[in-house]
Image (tube, rainbow, N blue to C red; front, side):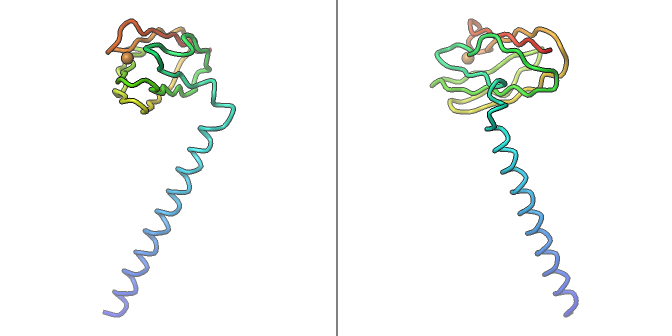
Length: 118
Ligand SMILES: [Cu+2]
């Protein structure tokens, strides 16, 4: 009985340690996203337009679409419909291969943007 209880205490300690490590990792990821070098891979949705309208990225880069409007947006890019974004929400897409990709908002087809992937 006694050793069983010690084992469960050890298990709880392990789980807590894992949670602390996981939290540390995600905090590091967030600060990396805010690094000056990643500014160029953000597209803002504002005033029913993508900004910048044309963005050049490298293959493997992630592009983050940030909804700064007061309405929802939903990006259709490379044949993939991304998660619908409520105001203030972001969605990320990875540029996997080189080429020029035109994209739109499915909710506002007049919203058009272009990614040039090098
Ligand atoms: Cu839209």
